[in-house]
Image (cartoon, rainbow, N blue to C red; front, side, top):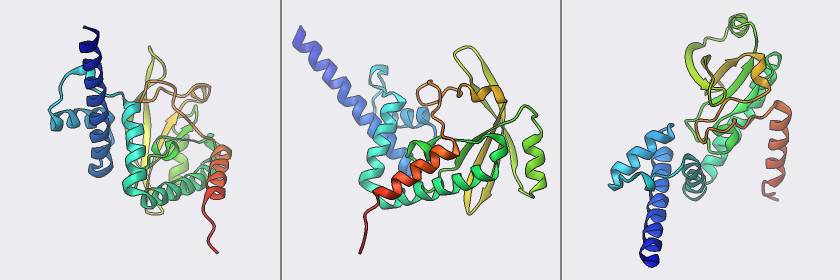
Length: 214
């Protein structure tokens, strides 16, 4: 009985691992951004449909990190570094809105098609709009629902634009949201965020870790 249960657990664990890796491959190669979509597509491709075998989003994110390291290597590292450097310049430009970097560019899973995602904070909902107009930045507005905690959500304005041949997403939030980040779609915990000074430190550490060539 114990042996059978152990075997079933091992089989489920192996299926979760295979599904996480396939979902990561689909995200890396197919440009899928949504973890849930990648998970379901991977399950369909592998013919695995029991809920117990479905990996958590964090498991897929870790598998994605491993896949990028093995198969994309320098290409992904360069894409990530380029976006982090561009994010810092953008944060300095939008300094009046207390910008924070979030998403794959911060987490380290950004690739050549990942946008730079920034949270901007302003109680005047039109302040960011006016700033974009004043600086002749053609941006497209969208709406995105974010969960503030288990009970509360808010519909935030998102401005999409391109600069330096990169895509940017500016999510406009009220000042009170600075105290606690919205919940991440990956694991439903408060999003990781970085200020410009924290990002500058991260870039400095990365630069120090680069191999020296004589």
